[in-house]
Image 1 (cartoon, rainbow, N blue to C red):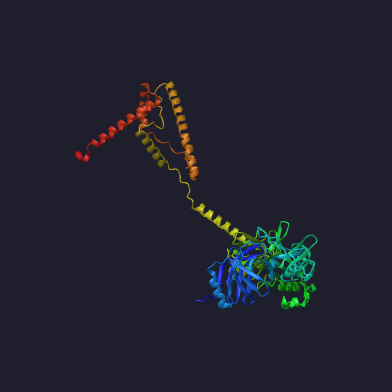
Image 2: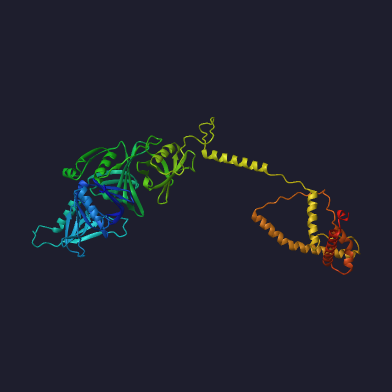
Length: 622
């Protein structure tokens, strides 16, 4: 089966010393590489490919595409077994051969340096040792017998190459006027398109307002970099660090934002600016004479730029960047907000700005500017605002775990933004569209009396709670009345159980039989006994109360009727009152007397029960 395309993951592309990870796709008409980190898609037309080389890159096999404009693009991360498959695909679809290049690994530092297109290649024994994309070179200076190359810096790299020096000896057989160092410098300048500050810029823009970084700058556009001159700071931005271009209208309809995405960002002390935001007035016009020859305009830019350009400033600047960077400018799509513009007024981290829903992401301008791609979003949420009932919060949860919150979005934008997000198939955590209110609306309320849905919901919950409490109170049963007979029966059963067990009786009955001294002595003994019982029972009661508190139980106390009759004396207490004086005369103490009385009472009860069981009944006697 013939493959229509080849696709490989975990492929790296070298960019100023940093290896960008991504995915490459080899198709019939083009080669595409998508950066995993930035999402930027780079497309190479197969008609522009002049040569394909199979060589090692980053210690792994890789592909090198040499293009017709002199540039070369290198992609590494392939495996050795992919060579035959890629070679057959290129021959079948592109009619090009993939040449396997053998590299020099001697490590010598002398050889031959040759500029091939926009690449400086260093050869040892006619084998390539290393090569330098001249687009990475920021400047080239010449000395007596050496040339110095200075390089752009990449903040993503832990170690960066600052400069490289080439010693170029003089040729004794050459002419006296010939200077090999100057020829080398000119070759680098000519083929790499390097311009310095002393050379004429392509275009100069005076006093352009920048919202990020804040201030007015004179912007000079060179073939390979931008130069910003302000009152306090100056910036130099390589053209190749520009990742995306946006042209966005202001909500007032009188201004335009031109947003330039940078990677790596420009730095000002410890602050990094990933975006350059220019603000233009729609009515402002300009006339520019480009610092390019007719040959350069025709050959390098294929006639897309004119020597003299005039018109609105934002249109002229957009066209220059569009051609020089060779990148499409992203503009708003079909979304139109409540104000009739694609801008949604909101705030991020207490700073007011505008949110632009685009076809492949959201752009927020201006502090801090950000571009949020849809493929980076995990979910979105429409939340109630804590500031006002006339607005809501738009929360964007990223796949990386962070959450971006845009506050104070006008409630008129809710349905429009909801429909837009829903059409883009983004996951919405609270998927509710405000077509019909779920609360009762007062038809006679004035225009200033705004209905708050959240407030109405809270009121309804409070009403439901009150109704539930009332129903619970009605369902609770009333306390039972005091039942005298049931209480007497319960106490009698408790007394009988204590009598039968031979334990000490609960109450002691004094029949006044005996002198007063004995009575007082008995009362003292009884009082001490009760105190002892109270002390012993106290810790038990405390433990019981603690356990009941822990269990959360609440017992309702029964009301005691003060007019209820007292419990009658049992047979045991009547018998004990009659015989108590006899026990005391024997010299027994109160506890001993009670213990002996209980034992005697039990023996008499058992004897009577035995006689009753042995006695014949009336039916048997007959």
